Figure 1 (spheres, rainbow, N blue to C red):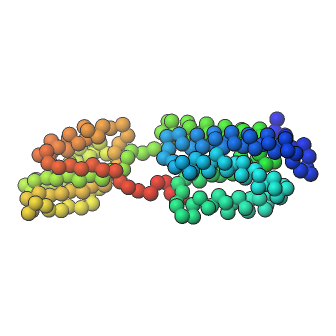
Figure 2 (cartoon, one colour):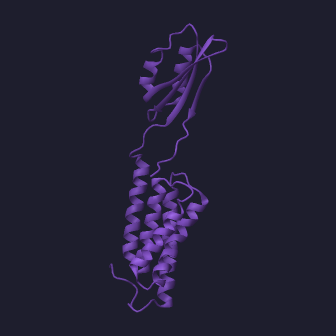
Figure 3 (cartoon, rainbow, N blue to C red):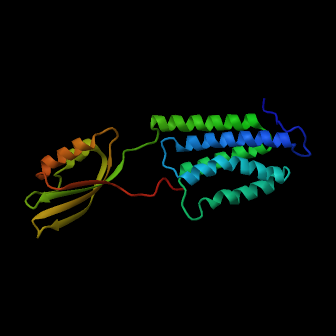
Length: 222
């Protein structure tokens, strides 16, 4: 089952190269689809994942089985993607999966590549589908309150009900000192409704301005 489809150690025939290339393209497309599943991605990244297995396969076939030389070339090639733009962990894992699949195809081990691909794709989809390791969304909250309200502990019960953690980061007076602006960094609990959270805050702050915004952070960088 796990035998190579390449019959001769001396070289690869044209038919073997075409078969391996076609399978590499199919496997690359599957990797790209798995990478895009419930994930932020770019068109260039998907294109890279589609063609990377066949490119890797071709390079290794050209070095005629010299795996050391081929891996050195491929390592440099894979890192090009991240020289000018940081890659997140899922992008890097997809790159390495495409590298492994291309390496297996260069040696003719179609079954090995298929089993590896199926295992990684299934694990990825299941973990994303079940939300394993996910946490609530990080948010920035700005609340305006009248000057006559004591902001110390004013919203603690609401934060306990709707957030996993919350930290006040700034207090500022506005409108000639007649209002306070309170800034918080917080993490929302999963499956809570933001509208209910905002409504509870509005009842406490006299229906003055409230801004809840997404925290702009670097994504899962390695």
